[in-house]
Amino acid sequence: MRFCVAIDGPAASGKGTIARALARHFGFGHLDTGLLYRATGRRVLDGLTPVEAARALRPEDLSRDDLRTAEVGQAASRVAAVPEVRSALLDFQRAFAARDGGAVLDGRDIGTVICPDAEVKLFVTASDEIRARRRMEELAAASQIIAFDDMLADLRARDRRDAGRATAPMRAADDAVTLDTTEMDIATATDAAVAQVAQALTRR
Ligand code: DC
Image (tube, rainbow, N blue to C red):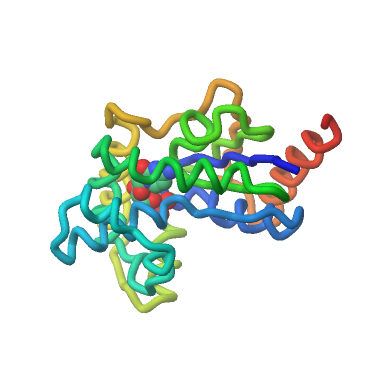
């Protein structure tokens, strides 16, 4: 069975947590597409050009343990604006979306470019301040201490670049359901997403 759940939204909106919870709940595969751009950005920081880095990407690069830093997030956002980088990463994502047994992909252009025919499309958002607070706490848990104002500026710069680029900008697909998690805890946000997917499954 092919069944694609497309989840988009800005950094630290909760989309990754929701995507993982959906995959677990329904037994679908999960691809965090941000990791592809982070791994590419990481290799650019190591000296490759963006296009070389994207074309040379191997599955094991995605499990590097140094991809979740703010520095790599910014490098990812910069390489993600290069059209040849995006096209080098397209086939892998589309193949994952079409896998047998169902797939959840989260990113910025899943509902608009990678899986425009996805059975469920969610656009997950939250206020800038709550996203900065969440990301700051996440990084602090990994011993990376960043001040709130710096975190806020970092997220806003990244969102501006991601939403403003010419190729596959971050935006909600016209048929996406928006989930604003500003006032929601994880369980409430996940329940809302599970309900959307369950409803789509009964329509098949
Ligand atoms: O989801 P994330 O914060 O790990 O993503 C890192 C960067 O990668 C993000 O700032 C923009 C880019 N990205 C993208 O352009 N398209 C995607 N589908 C996923 C991520």
